[in-house]
Image (tube, rainbow, N blue to C red; front, side, top):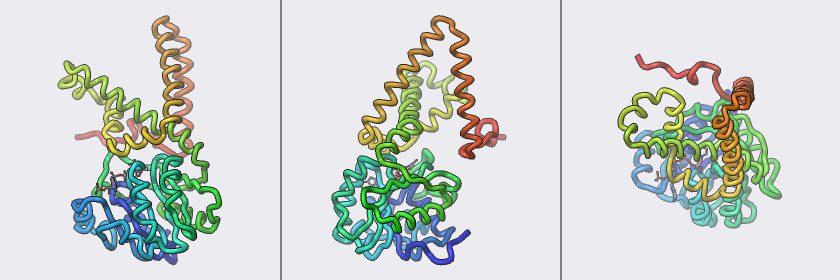
Length: 308
Ligand code: NAP
């Protein structure tokens, strides 16, 4: 349902990739913003954004983009947040809200927080939605529909400003929840960061077996491996920054993962079918829980349409 009045009069999107582009399209769909101004680092991305009308107005710098903006969204890789925050700080409107969409929260709070002037609200957030595509042409209006957006208020965050940002995310189609930054980083290390690392590794292992890469691995990748290759096609800059900035939580989960892997490895070596069966029964139940929570489809092969 489109909002009766825009939630923010002017929104500035810093970065014009998958997430910002999808936000712009979903904001238009819900009429959530009076005007959407956007900018990106490269002239090439800004030109594409202009050409496809991704936002209402494209400007050349982040400093220009935030002038008079009521909501500023930092939608650049986590490692680039500090420099962007430093650039925009002197130009922020008093009473504005600065938020981000970074996949890691503690590092973003530490990097951005010190630059936010008095009288400006800083409310980090993270939409749990994405694809392996990136860039200004990759966004789509339904990306956040029925997905979660975690809001991570910092100490002293203004409750009205938090409520307004939550209303924005709900207008974008997402469910919202609040979470503490460290808890967020641990949960995401389990649900997203470590699985990505495992996918990157598995694809790397397959590639090491060069003898098969050119033939069988590609030809017969209809099984689970194909999903690994999709995840491992995700943006290298974004994922480099995730692991550099969520180091402790990722290493903690990787440690646990390795222990479990060794346990299963031993079960295979010793022929302990009961342990394997019990383990897989338990994990199958987890998948059912995800479907029951409406976070994925029950259709075989994720509902993919088979090529003719
Ligand atoms: P994206 O499609 O690659 O877009 C990134 C944008 O940031 C581009 O406009 C890029 O500009 C700009 N940028 C890159 N490096 C920069 C730098 N050093 N300084 C200033 N701007 C820079 O990325 P995305 O997927 O939208 O991700 C944006 C943020 O959302 C990241 O923090 C990521 O962690 C988070 N996130 C991503 C996903 C996902 O699945 N993709 C999901 C949730 C959250 P140019 O195009 O000009 O290079």
